[in-house]
Amino acid sequence: MRRCRAFIFDFDGLLADTEGLHYETIAAVLGEEGISITREENDASFLGVTDAGSFEVAFAAVGRQLLPAHRDALVARKAMLFHARIGSVDLFPAARSLVLEALARGPCTIASSGARGDIEAVLARHSLSAFFPRFVSAGDVARSKPEPDCFLKALDLLREPLPGLQPGECLVFEDSPRGIEAARRAGMRCCAVAHTRPAAELAAAEWVIGRLGQWRWW
Image: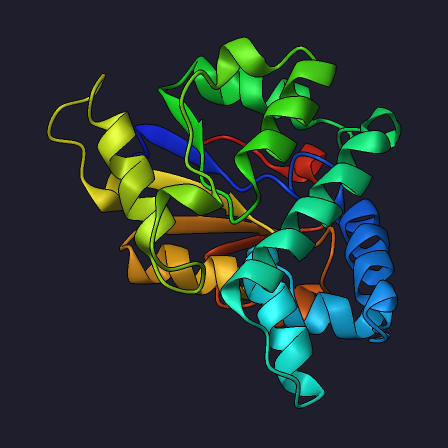
């Protein structure tokens, strides 16, 4: 097996324990619109989906039209609520050590469906910004996961220090079925971490572990 030379991390639910806060803030905004959503519905429908896409799905599910200007206002409202509580966001155990171990083996970046401002705020809170000076977020690609766009964009970033890097030489760390599918469509290998979804739902990945600290390098 060709050894991986570069590494791509999802962010929400993988490095940062943010999914609960994302649910609470999007549920609060939807509640202001008269739409209720459970955590189970959120995790089934929104993991790996942009905030804009999540609001579109939620409105469509109740048969309501969502115009772009209204959608963008909801996204901004949700971001305001999220940033007001950014101090409660922790990293998953072993997240920092895994990033450092990966950086010792090759270049790394993030490919996320999350908002750039949200990711930057969490990275800054945990002094990780210097490790990810450039990364891919929701606004950088036209299509979100399970489409491969974010990972292919990440590949472009990784080719700057590693010209000629091939997709199959990249290892993606993911926590959602949509993310796994996106990595596979990009031609990359994937380790799934069962932080947010049961391991059985992540079986399409080449490796499935229960937590980051269980990963073992070759």
